[in-house]
Length: 173
Picture (cartoon, rainbow, N blue to C red):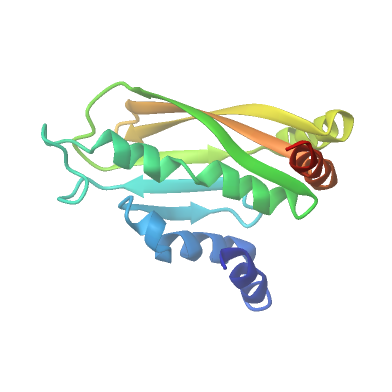
């Protein structure tokens, strides 16, 4: 549903606009209480904001760690799917969360891919058919103090290779 809707909307809007408002209007992302506040035209940069409110406040009065994790969870994967295009498969594989300080106010996070990273990903997938990459991002408060750090492992594969791998797995079973 989301993918076909995105393809339709690309006729009328920039990919960055669809990405930003698609996330912000999506019921699953809205429940995290975060918002995308900035998306670059090439989708290489995304910034989120997570305000402390009654929906995400924990027993200790700070932002619930699950809200922080959920707010960061889908960004890198969908960002990379959009950047790489239809010839690739991208999946979230793992996340390691490190909570450093209580989030007692609004916090922010940035998700960045450089052109060099994208080229390296494409080269490595062309050479190995499938790879894992590690991306690290932090949520910070307005004073730039790190509140939490997330290490995301993403799986990226050539789509034809991935489909053949799945087909072989199904015929074995």
